[in-house]
Length: 363
Image (cartoon, rainbow, N blue to C red; front, top):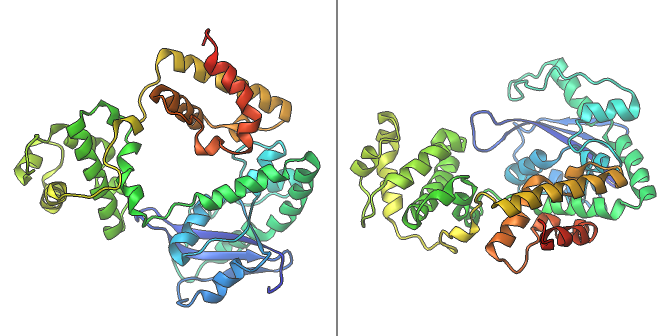
């Protein structure tokens, strides 16, 4: 495959009871041949990584976020260039989250099976039906890319699409970036209800869960649920040292959980942590005020109307969470209101309409 200008890629993995995904199979297609790579016996991945990062090589995926996360964690690598057929399809008029099977049917009039979607990809040997399913997942990606590329170019949207692909590569999370663990408390929807002391405790508790999830390789919710940590943070007393008894008296966890984790939690909470950014209330999401709720509806309506003119999905312009983030920035009095997800080609399209809505006296 050396010298191949584009290469389709997909992966099969298991992540039902672990924090990190367990790769079960890698699939490649160069437009002619399909290759199935069993990752279980392989120890040296340098040649494979060089293939993905070959100069000029475009890696074609469909709905790439999980596959990119798997490559980042398992192989510590990402493609140099990316073509996501799901995102490309959304730029030429298809639904924002169109499946690979639906796109193959729409573009090529081919029906693909879905029978092995929840299959066990770690068992060996893999069944013939699994291998066939996996091979089909990459068989048509090169052809789809060629069709969509021509349409993107003719519509004048290729630059937008390529910018999105670079953003997707840039935004792949590094699960070992401890600075992001410090900000984990911000994902708790009701964190804004806590007082300052409880908010500081929640930051430590959320960080503790991040550490435990990785050490034990278990999903976060298997370590402790969001509501449990929120409740514990609100019930722990305000004194210098938290004890196991304090955690027990909070009446949040089972005896089995306390036996395994109470001392670990108390020890972690009592430590002095030099966080790069201690918990800040102004970074939390909180309910929008009445004015902002009206503005949210107006922004969504404006985006729908513009999307209709462009014949694209409104979600491609801005998903609801980005509008909320923009309005939260306004509520906080931030000088820069534009979220990262809108600070690109979207801002050029949306800015006039956005500014009219947020400055309107009737909003």
